Length: 189
Length: 193
Length: 258
Image (cartoon, rainbow over all chains, first blue to last red; front, side):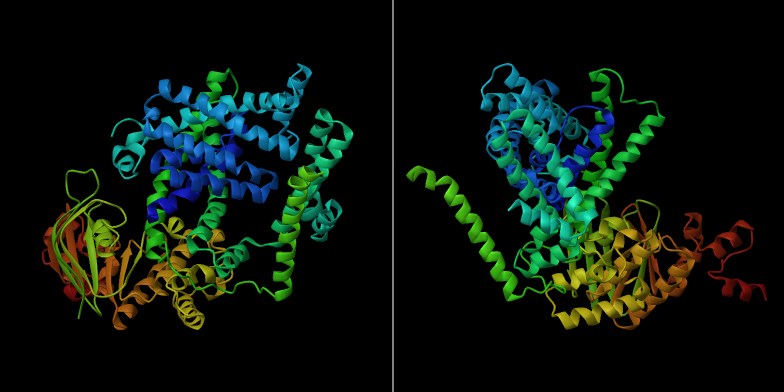
């Protein structure tokens, strides 16, 4: 792995972590904790993306150890972003947002078993509340859990994909040309 | 197990140790009660509390500097130690920059109030400059790393690694085995009952 | 003994049509200090990156011509924050970062680090966390960190940009000392007034090509002053309408006046 890609990973992971903290300022119920992972994959491929996801999870774990089992989700996100980048799905909002919605489904399918088995589905307040709602609606426990994480993941991943698309298009051509995957991801290669 | 973990966390002092452990674990108990019956709540709650408390203790005991050097002395590659350390030091910088961007935009009238569309626009106005400036720095960081000799595959000399007495090593192995045993008991033994 | 030789070197940044360096031929010998001067964007920083083997190897782009290096090089870049390793929590560890990566034995690292800290007058700051330092202090730490790696060819890109007057003076004295010890130094700076005391030779870059090479007296030439690259004394002399040749330093001007 070249030095430039090695230097990219901590920056991308820090982007995820900083945005997760900053999203309160815009009062939107989003996580954005996979922004860096998706961005790194779209710029430099799946290896760098997965590494970014793992590092993001590792640092999150230092602050709140309950995050560690979800490293699996970060890895799945990186793989999905890889497929999306190869297909050039970051070329416009029209292709990126549906791709993000698709990721939302996959992410919640992946995180639900983890959340359920390890935590009894109580990972964050929002998810727990929507799970309670699901239960009240008569869904079985696992289904309620899925409902809980689905509702938040759906929007979060779509917004993240849209954000990454904006960033990729805003990069000056010269800079984008030096990241191996960037141009392909926006369908310009 | 939970009592041991909480005890360890408390040994680090009330403020940095016990309090964060309790604070992090408390919401889980609340939501568990909301969703499950009492026995399940207690079982899962204790498990979570143990996890949280032991980690809080770990983080409070380990200074970041010694963590990095310990990793290198234990044989982790310098690149991996770099990834963790560089992320830890970059996060506060980016967070501070994010705060400055939000303030600057509030001065310019971009308010996070309003409908979803307005808030999404505000998010974009915050995230885009933050991410672009961070990406621009990647090149400079790469040059600096290269100049200081941090290239993949080097054998780095550890600087004052923390001492690793045999007792602690043995204790680590014992704990690892205990975890594995517990896992086996949970997953495999029920099949035979 | 030649430490660095560029032979008809040209360099294009990635995805850029016009070259940042055009047909540059330059030699730096051990024990000499060569200063690069020029307008902003003239190519001094690029030249240093090429000399440090960072261009095109790390930043991409295309290089034509040859670059020959005899010694290990170290480069000090202009912005201190991005040069911090991110892995050191004391100044001592930061300076030791490079030598540790070179795999030197612990006693050798200690020797080099202590020496570098002393030269940059950083001993009182040795246990401070680098993120708490000012720009000038951090820049001195970075310089110490590069020197601790004992490079034979030392490259500086605007090293005094963040330093105050006292810090800058210490730096220029240190650079002369490095040359005396046998190192080759290539320095890009806009601190033109310091050059007569620091540099043995001056290379004037314009649009990526070498416009002129000479001793520091170059900075009192009519052509250089016309381009805004004269020392303050020469520029003032010229602006006052006094006759050529323009004096380089205060001492020269005093001689002329007598």
